[in-house]
Amino acid sequence: MRIAIADDDREFGKKTEEIVRKHCEGIGEEADILCVTEGDTLLEMTGSCDIYILDVELPGLDGLELAKRIRERDEDAGIVILSNYEKYALPAYKVRPYDYIVKTRYETELPKALDGIWRERQRKDREEVYLLENDEGIKLLRLDKILYLEKEKKKKYTIIHCSGGENHSEKLPMEKAYVKLPKEEFIYINRGHIINMKYITCLEKEEVTLADSIHLPVSRYRLPKVKDEIARYWGR
Image (cartoon, rainbow, N blue to C red; front, side, top):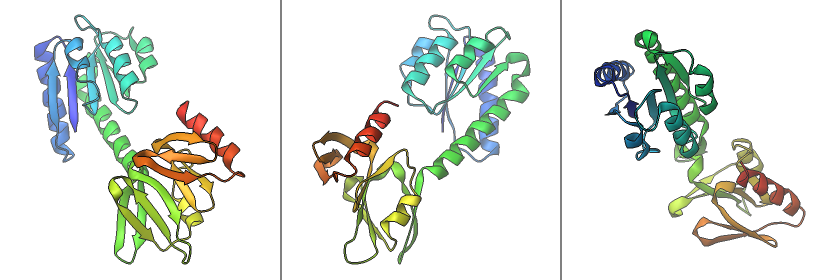
């Protein structure tokens, strides 16, 4: 886990790092911790860290504006705001931080926030996998690696096509495989194919194009719904 700490008080930043490192060791999580004293320095690294611990009053780009920029680039980042004052709490929550902590309470509150972020990430990681069961055993497939699912014509099998040319076969009717997928990301385009909308590059007439130049037909019956779902997904 990569954790960034931004605080213009070097001594306070060092104490914060000690708390973070001790907590990560306690939960058995390896941590790569970066400490900076200016928001502009950290902005250049936005997207490369999992958790950001930000002081509000930073020289140059202040902590709230920095948090806003981070959130624009990384929806899933765990952000904790630290401040000497309560008055910044309301504007801080506009950037959806995990927690806002007054510095007088940071020694007890920060470990709780880190633990909450860690647990939330674990839960999300569990939700973002597909449990594949076949003759070879049980395997977890990352949902964001699945391009599309295809119905095997002769047998009650589902073929799962993944990025990088990796394919898996599961002895399961495709309609039952669909139950294990998040409906906001995967959609039927015809009786024999379910696609991951993340990989759509084009929908033209009655054909959808996925990454890796994969072309699949869209049935006329499903075409209006497919168009609506793609527009919804792209508009998120």
